[in-house]
Image (cartoon, rainbow, N blue to C red; front, side):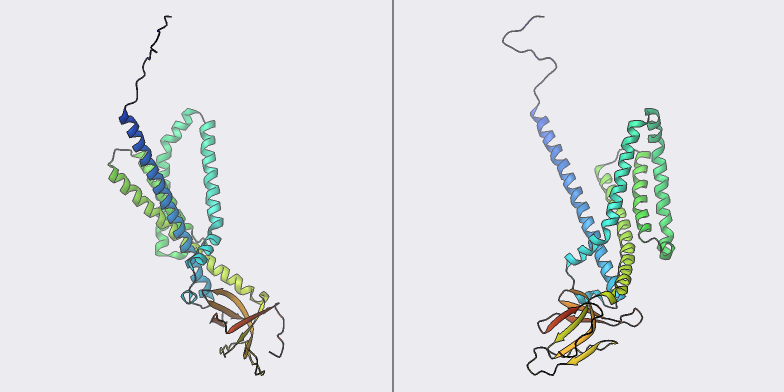
Length: 310
């Protein structure tokens, strides 16, 4: 071998053209924009689903106690907190299921021979398309008669969303082709909207069921809630079965009226929500009292008899 002095010989190498670096930079920026847009869209959808769950939950929960939710003027963070409380188990179950499926796919790629993997790749798209169309088709009768899946709240909407994803992904692999960027964007945007529709449908049914269930559970726990004695500067005219008004006789008393036989259900948006200690779904009375300095609340263990004097 003969050495070349002074100059290093290069074989098959060339200096990158400035255009190549600019193209890479442009491609990287475009990919970053796509990732940011995808994350922002999914984050916005997740927040909307949480808020929607909390809103429907609030409507059904307080509707059970005959209180219209708008009079409470609840803050957005309270509604979102109810959404997070109600959806944390379904979200965890969905994430766990997805992780298991991804693990099975990795395991199949590692263990299965190439011949079987090729066969699965060939038959997978039509099976996914048929399964997706079947799931979407099953949900059509539910639109006409929502009571068909009344015992499985959220299942029709979830089946619709999963069916749309399976049908679109399977069809794209089954019938490949070259399309314009505008067509692809419109296709995926339509798919995203349909999936979002299915998720909102599922959340609406599930949150309504959870709201009624939690209201029923809360109503059953009313006897075990702490008793509340309400002191007021002026008469509140709280009249219901089991509620007693006492007029304080001391002239120097700061609070002239006392009310017993109440339980505090919630304090929110500057409002107290009281129910009677004997509240029943058939004839129970619920009071919404504005929070102010003219009121004082006194809590006692359940079943404690209030004193006779103020």
